[in-house]
Length: 213
Image 1 (cartoon, helix red, strand yellow):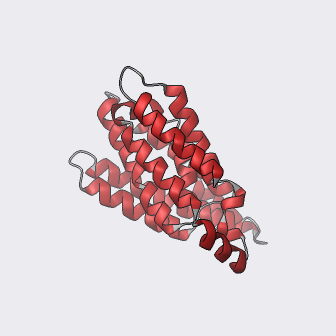
Image 2: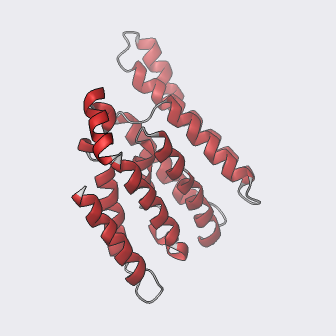
Image 3: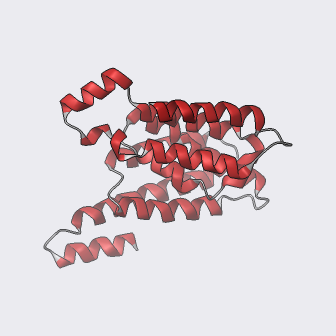
């Protein structure tokens, strides 16, 4: 709780002093995001891993601090405005870590950041595409799922939210839909692959490997 209060102090200082064009400090903002993500993903805050009694006790006394810092990360991202492009693709991995935390409200609040990154790269890269974001998300997703994170609910929500946001956008509707379905099918294959790795059948494992490739 003390750390959370400190991080919240940093947010107000960053917003007031280091956000405008003249005072913007890339390294400070970078440090802030990495600190906030490290806090949110720290093992001592992963309530799902505790017994029901311990979980209830923590929530009653402190609430789920992951949601509090997660919503703050989201707000700070949107505050960046035109500076956002400086954080793509480097921030894709850390934001992915946040969205993979199995807390439904946190996921719903942070997955739309991916669409914002797509939109940002599309508008500011000069190439009218989001290839940097796309390549980074696919690479990091592979690593995270292999590391044990991600589940079926995440796959469904990711596809749903990306499709919803992309379909409302004039230029991203078509490429965004292709990307959302690609990521969803990749995630499905990665989850299957992770599950089947302990299967006795060599054929099943080989089939899953081919699907992922």
